[in-house]
Image (cartoon, rainbow, N blue to C red; front, side, top):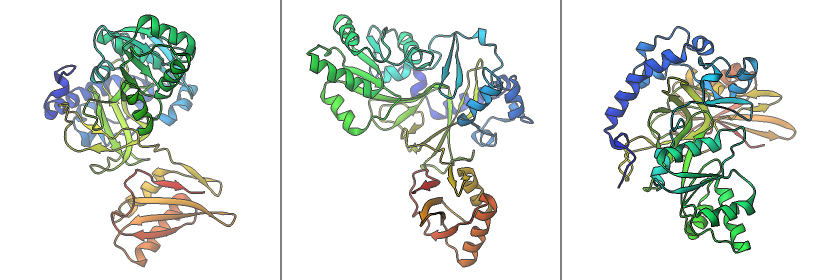
Length: 405
């Protein structure tokens, strides 16, 4: 089985040593920016050379970036380089402002396309948007770095896209899975020939098993990538179809939602990513997405960590009686009572009033229950009940707050 380069199959200990030997320099570059200097105040970069040391650094929440960017445009003070030193400048809803570095494949995507079967010389129909947001250029740069030719189609203009497909005969597609289905359905209805497309790398929307089966039945081998406008390609599928492989040059952690504390192996938690690009490093960026790590190595021979893919949102804050309750508050309850296991706050309504019940895994008695009730009230400033449940009985789905109203 072919691989993009030797990094994909190297010994995990070599990858670990390489990433964490580079981390101090990434921290130094980050701390040249005023906002990161304040955010990481008191940190000695030379001492951050292990996962345990990294886990002690504060997270930066992606959900906080819009307010930070508005307060100090364009990058909230988190990038030391001047905007003119980058190759392209984008915006995403929020707004969040993202720069693109000048080097080839700045979003590290070529290996993901390669894993999906894209080859040098392929023609690729890229339907991600090229307008203001970085999606189109993220996949465009990856495909060109691999040696592919790009049709910069963007979304929409279905009739014109069908004409381009019949004219250029692209072998591959990049875009959302929804748009791929729209194009295929439109081609069938108009009796247009799109049979040249045999491969696809999709992202940006759910790709449920039913749609996967439909796309496969129509002769297209489609793979998924997990990418964001901030970081580019984070993880991708391989022919083994056994989870998503974390991209090289990234350190990915999975933490308890609302905290920076790593979860136990196999538990669902929030994705936190550190990138080592010296021009634009991210240090513990919490993305608000849930996943879980998979054990062992991929059958495709790639040795990096595998994750299950997107499993929902970690941003589970909700209002109870007009006051926000957040995952970090539930985590604080757990820290004050280390004898507790998993916690889940269930919010519902009784009559016309909000109610909340904290279900906590523990072998405890009424005294522990009363103590946790008191802590819940002190932390949330709201009254609620506590149910102690058997250890291991709460779902391992990363959900800390379940709003059932």
